[in-house]
Length: 197
Image (cartoon, rainbow, N blue to C red; front, top):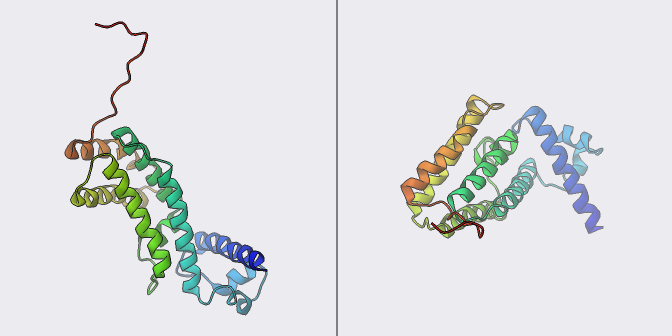
């Protein structure tokens, strides 16, 4: 019974994402969402108490997906930071609706629940921990980093959603930040076959 309920909640959230990508987040219609999953609106409310509860579940799902993306890149070097930044950038621009829900205040009056917001704080801590593992410990530098990366994402999404203009600046931005903070490249490995000079 509990498993079936969880599956139905998952189906509703998947349908909510589809509908939001079609119509936008704010105009998301609970009646239309219920129809999309084959139920009446009052039945849907037995799974989610309100429209905000649906948004909250979507927000949490997005944060869980982001956590997986962040955790896949944990190399404490300039090259590792480049790879992680490209992954974060692509995560954001690949789904503008998810980006809006997670990082912008698009829905008037919506605030994620403390439980869902804690997932966002955990993701920020994941990013901070990666920077610390690379030797970047200043909270000012952490703030600078989030401003640089989210600035590139915002520019790409606002001005050239389907293009590469700001995506192509990621490596340069990482290098400027790395030079500023003293993050070095990984030492080059020496080949066993190489003759000493």
